[in-house]
Each structure stands twice: as C-alpha cells, then as structure tokens.
Amino acid sequence: MPAHGDAGHVTTEVPMTRFPRFRRARARRLFAAATTATLLLISAGLTTPGTAAAATPAVSEPGYWVVTAPATAVGDLATDLSRRGYDVMEGLSPDGVPILATADAARRLRRDGLTVRYTGPLYQPVPATVQAAAGTYYGGYHTAAAHETHNQQVVTAHPDLAVLRPIGQSWLKTQNRGGHDIQALCITKIRTGDCALSTTGTKPKFTLMAQMHARELATGELAYMWIDYLVSNYGRVSAVTTLMDTTELWVIPIANPDGVDIVSSNSTRPVSQRKNAHDNGCSGTGRGVDLNRNSSYHWDVNQGTRCSETYPGTGAASEPETQGIQNFLAGIYRDTKPAADFSPATTATTGTFLTLHSYAQLNIYPYGWTNSLAPNNTDLKAIATAMARSNRYTVVHGDGGLNYFAPGATDDWIYGTLGVPGYTVEVGPNSSTCSGFFPAYSCMSSFWNLNLPAFMTLASAAAKPYPTGS
Ligand SMILES: [Zn+2]
Image (cartoon, rainbow, N blue to C red; front, side, top):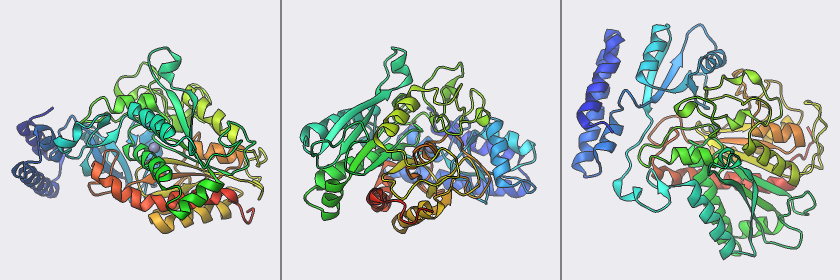
C-alpha cells in the first residue's frame, strides 16, 4: 500500500512526462484538487494511508480512462482495443471507449496516436469503521460465503416463502480445490408444485442473476437486497404480495463465486477479477474465462485470447458455471422459440430474465451478437422502456448501435435458445464517485431506489412478456 508521498509523487510524474503543455496545466490542477481532497479527508479523520492513496491514484493502480481516435468509429476502436488486450468497459458511448488501465498503458496508447483522458481512480475511500463487519469487504459488500449464509438464513426464517437449490459448481469445486456450488433461491408463496427444477410449475418465472462478472460489486449486493425486500414484505406491501402469489422469483445472487473470492481477497483494495478462476496459465486477473462470452448461443472463438478479459473459453459452455446456469434455466423455462435466429417466440411465452452488470446506466435487450433487430424487438424493447421509467437508464439493444458485439452472453442465450426475454442492466453511472466497479458502499441506496421498481416491472412482465408477438 503506497504512502502519501509515493502516491503524490507518482501522480505528478505520470501525466507530465509526455503531455503537451496545455495538459500539464490541467494535470497540475488535478493534482492540486486531489491533494486538497486528501487533506480534507485527513482533517476530517476519515482516512488512513490507504484511503489517502485512493484520492491520488498510484501508477501501479489502474484507473479509468476514455480513449478516442478521430478517424475510427467507437465500436471499431473498442473491438481493436479489446483484441489488443485492453480492459474495455461495458458502457460504450459515442463519446469514446472507457477502459481500465494503468498510467503506463495509457501512455502507450498516446504513443500510438490515440487521445486518452483520465476519468477517475479504481478505488474510492473506504471508512475504516465499516471494513470490519463480518462477511463483508470494501465498506459493506458481502463475500460469496456471506451470500451463502444469507441464502440459508432466508430459507430457515421463511420456509413458506423460499427454497434454496444448488444448480451447478464453480470451476475450483470441479477440481476439488475448494470452490462453491452455484446457488439459486426460489422466492414465492409456496404451493404444491412450486419451485421445482422443471417446467411443470404453474406460475410464470422471473430470474435475477448477479455478479457473473465478479468485480461488478453493486450487482450481487442488489440481489441480496432484492431477496430481503421480497421475503420481508410479503403480506405487507400489496405489490409484493401479489407478485409472490402469482410468480416464482428466482435469484442467483453470485453466478461466479470463485471470481468473487478473488475480488474480496483484499478488503480495502478489491481485486478487479472479471472472469472465473479457471487456471489458464495467465497471471493476475488474466486468469479465467469470461462467463458472459461462454454461453452456447453464438459462442465466438474470436472474442479474446487466453489472458484477455473477454476470453470465451475453449468452447461453447466449456465452464461448469455456464453449464450449471444454462441447465438450470433450460430446466425451468419452457422453450417457445424456433431455433432460427430471426423466428419470433410465440405470444404464449412466459417468464423473464435479468442479468445484472456494471456500469453505464443501460437497460440492454437482445440481440448483442448482431446489429440486426431480434424478431420480438417490439415487445422486448417495450419492457426495457418500461424499466427505464423508474431507473432512467438508456434503452439499447445489444450492440448499443455501435457495432460492438458481445456474442456468447447469457441474455442472448436465454432469448435465442428458449425465447425468454433476457435483459442486462448496467448498474451505476459513467462518472461521479458512484461510478466504476468499486463504488463506495453508500452508493447502494441510490442504485436500489432506482432499480427496485425496474425489477418489479420486469418480474410482473413474466406473465405475458410478448403481447404483440413482434
Ligand atoms: Zn459485466
């Protein structure tokens, strides 16, 4: 952990080495502002050497940058950067390609003639008092083990409202090297036949899945809050009572528990592990397979090389996490869509699905593997738009209109394979202290307030998601 002086030294040195003159002035202002912030924190007694370093990012710690190239379309630039091994964020915008990178990497991009703008540090200050809470890290986020304890506690406290099912194993568990079962909770007012691992149940189903990308901290926490909200408000909040009387609400709070173990292994400086823990000979966060490129629908070998953040694995559904999740979803949802990509699912389809990611404030609907509209586009978009009425996020189909594709993702798989409308919500803003993979835990309340009504909207749509059939 760098001391104050190290961090300050690094910050002044890095931007000035190769910056043109006008940038040097800006760098000085940035440094002055960061120093002021650090001093304010120190005087308020809110900081330790570690948190002070967060205000002035060290060269060894990555930060967020936006990359632009005047002559290159954003989607092409993102594809190129990703193929070259850069860590491209999920919130692509016409303004540029956000990446997570060290200052050294940013310097290399500038040398290549690209424009690179620093937008903020990876880490936010964490009050020391909160870090110690059992089963949490980085100011309050729950570890994978704490999620599992919580799932069990919910079932024990509410046997009439919740059932816990193991649906698969993490990679480490398949290797007998520790690891986890993947857990799914079914929350509903349980009647005979409910929460079976089959398509025979009479209630339509909504599944919320989180933290498939392990470093996207806010997503697992939203799942945790969603579980608590449901079981504690049955019989109290009429919309919740109605929903739980009529719908099976499945939750996979941690889709990538091995990855989350890596992330939470440092409680003040979480590791930015995105992929699972599959040993592939790569060091650091290069280890693993991107589970959101590993699905068996339009799996694409060209999504990334072994050590890159979007490495899709050695084959479609090569990973045990993917197999468990796909088998579970195919087991509980009825298939109402012909296999052809552009044949629509029928109006008899029931069920909805949501996978939470971060960040960028987007409600994304299929397809993400192509820029052609899905055959149920009208209905798919209508639900995403209804969700946006509460979370105010931007509604986009998979490639965001930017020709940057994500083949092998879970949302495309469930829609393309089963016909169930699959959504990705990218939680959290592109800027401010609540941005990034590691927002301060205090940001959770705003994320929750924005997204709870969106979850309710999507869950309620499970009864008849395709009113028009187009
Ligand atoms: Zn993600």
